[in-house]
Length: 105
Image (cartoon, rainbow, N blue to C red; front, side):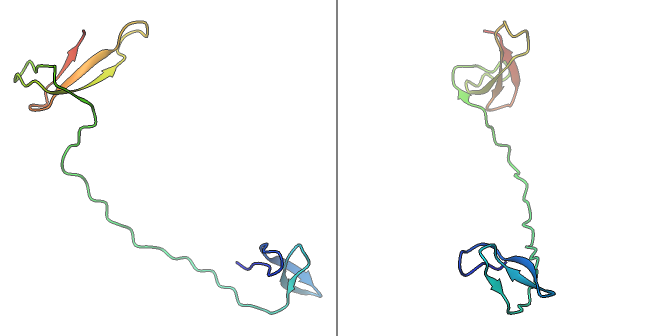
């Protein structure tokens, strides 16, 4: 891209005396023919490496006991499974054995 040395605007093509030159709206005309070249540079794509371990994003509570293994820490989240005027259902997932159960309290 070429810019006007007077005002800094982008120069655009204009017809002057049967020739196409680069000019600006402020009146500047670049009469020197410059060779313009358009290049497209494609960068090498980075390889996406999958994550091998499962990352838990839910909060962890220590006042829930797993009915399967008895572990006292579990991840929890809430889902609105019934009508909107009723409370949400709390789901828990054991930190140790990954067992999932519902808590209706």
